[in-house]
Length: 112
Image (tube, rainbow, N blue to C red):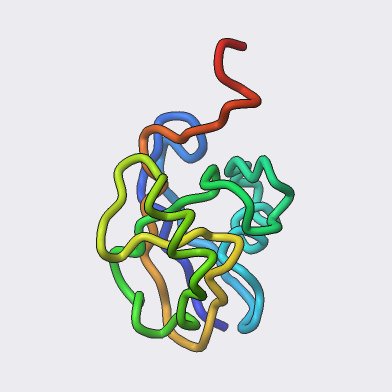
């Protein structure tokens, strides 16, 4: 079973962690199933950028991003060449290292 190394994030995973993920699940679902409450304002329907992650290792093992995801990523805070929406990135057989960006654009949450 592949592992996902989650780099430290002050709010979601202060110490960082290593989780096991089933092949074929989204990175978002794997994180949520292991108590890492990453934002997913659109309920994982590829309609926002709140679940944006930066894949530091294992990027090429993920499924290819579709055009809709790439269009949304253009709006994500802190976009990098190895950015993905975690709700669309499907875990394969290779271990991953992911970083949750410090900020996210969540219009529903802003100001609360």
